[in-house]
Image: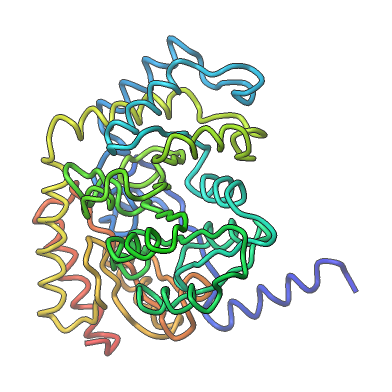
Length: 392
């Protein structure tokens, strides 16, 4: 028996169940329209909420930074020193979010991994929303703390499980996604804060899909609820609305100082590259100048979602521009994705393990870069595919 046979068998099994992920190839910048597998298509599946991934000001900032600093930092910041550009980004993002301080990581995933394990460990407890992102789940596991899940976006159940576990831990952490990426719903952060404050428990929120979307000029979920200085830490990413790459933790200055001493991705991996950092600073500049992009995003999202409902699609209970087209079984989602692609729409199917079995969907990601004509074209093709496949 060959040592790869088990993998080949599992891959064959995934294909037979319609769960094998085929990754298409892009040969153009991210935007409302893409060249995918050599074909020009309308893009409905990237997280480029504000259209910043190819924004001229971000591109120019990245090029200029390369001329000044080169490409990369060449080592971890604690050994090789930190570039003033990294300090500038951390100061700017903290001020933008109304936080005491901030620290950057290589990605949002790394930010969750490094932060959670630095704050809790053995003999501690993490109270985690049952639908939290994989990076939170992995960070919780790496910490060694006991994980207690509470029902999705259910503060009453959270308080119940806290009471059930009182006096069983040294320290505790409540952690939740801010905007849940698959369903587009928003965590009740105001209620979670009340509970965390009442029991003197650390509160963390992963705002990956809230940055650039919620709050004034896209300042995020803490701003959305008016909880500045009350949420201990806000974990996020520059890879979605900011259109770049990198992770960030903003919040209490003591926590940020501690993460610089014990956040393992910060200590043992090189920092964000120079062009990425400069592009992120440029994105903050744009958002501080105007909320035009955020307003356009919401206008586009509200229009698309209302029309999809009128046309008979089940789009779940999304409260954000994330628009899940609920289809149920993975093979149907894959078939609909292929039908859409054949007709010029790039919309990726999502199935298990990203979402639970029986909850397969196509998740439409609306962008400020879409024109009304783009949205109408997408609506037309979704409706045609939905009717052809018996979805509506």
